[in-house]
Image 1 (cartoon, rainbow, N blue to C red):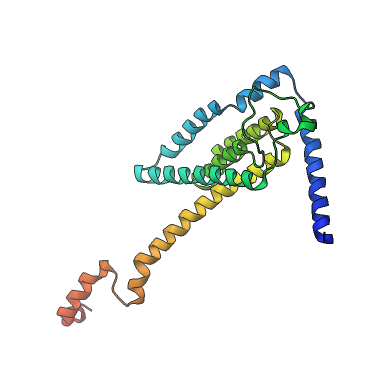
Image 2 (cartoon, rainbow, N blue to C red):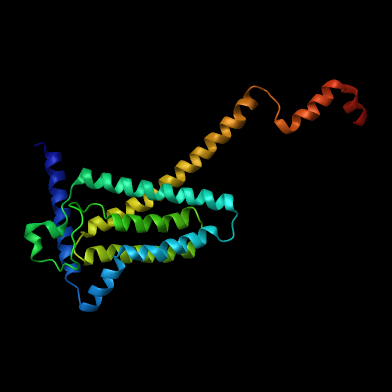
Length: 231
């Protein structure tokens, strides 16, 4: 094996070792109260009030056309986030810590189900950070974005606490969630600019008049003395 590849494998192994140690440390800090709280934070039912809060912010103080556009952008953010997270998991194939034989007896596992075989990236964390980034990038609501970011951090920690993800999975999920929101916003911005260019640039390059100016130009062509007499 070439030296650079061996060094890279060694570095990745070291990162994995640190990630596992951090996971065992943080997962070991538990109590009955936190067990109950983290189970609720990690529950999908928490998404109901979060979605209602986002929809209220989306439709408040804006017209229906803009609200519909933002709703479509939100759907695009969610689609990119979920599809991308699934593809990353299938590509990396990092086994969940609760499914690793050497760790199974050392994990404080909360809950009765172990969903999915792979852990990187955390889909729950990615989704939560995607919604927070959407509130910041698209809705331009800083306070709402701060609230959702705090919620996203709690979701990420809960996934580690219940024994389903390493810290690296949480960090990767946060990065991917923000990236998905930024990517969706960038695609919409690019599409709108390309549409504007398609509608206006060809006419300008061909030397054609803008539609609003054509009647005045037609009148000038029919009666050229009208313009000169007024000047």
